[in-house]
Image (tube, rainbow, N blue to C red; front, side, top):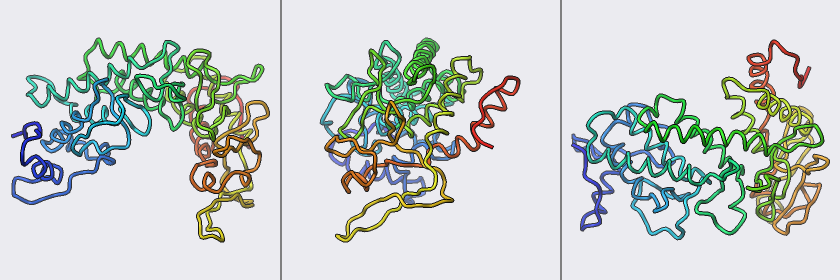
Length: 369
């Protein structure tokens, strides 16, 4: 028997604790999964009564707009949110929707009260995602819009990428067979507009396609800066996720092929070789990072590159641009990912496989020996 929705009457706290700890029919107590592991359970678990009960907890965190906030435990009791906007940042909205979908997969005829509640929450959430899309095809970080940089098209930390992958799965994956056909058709249209936005925001220098900024203006689609240490620039991190997404298109048209080839060539051109990032403790006992010579190290990419010369760009909280990593403050060096090996496997393995699959019959660029 499924547990009824959790109410706020006396005894709810103990009941919620037992639910979240996973009381079994034998009386034993087993630890329920943490919200951070909600999408990493065995496939059969999502059809259990425990999963459905936890899914009900997730629905109670859904905001009036239809989205969810970020950085909260959705398996825990709901609290009054400080803001009313849903977000796509830090797994907000998309992870709860994917969790609800995993629980709803396989639910067909004669759903009960619990399933109806989950279906309704999922439907509202998908409509929220669709309503948040800009006419130009992109998505902001928050919706309804805030009056700050979060209203920009947000590739930063893969926010919009998660939206695109979710819509693609709704339209392609059998796990989403329960989705209403009309809603699936809307998702298909939104996905197409999103792909067009990705192609149109790729920065072109002359006749050469390069990469993407972490944010773009929703109207002009031009690169845009966000926080003081996140300048208008070319991204060596977010661009990798967008390339992978384009490479997963089963039948790429010439525009998609050109976008992938141009971005791959750019990543190969701007890679940093012969250096590695070293974490250390400074004389004051504080954590810090620095670049040190390392001839055999895996290539690195900078998080930010200048739009004109495509050189690594470093900015701290004062917003002053520097060409040297050591020039910004220690707090940012230690607390933000200015370098990473983000594109190493993409260039070494994934792109060659994609090229062999899609471009074997036509001449194409080469990125190495």
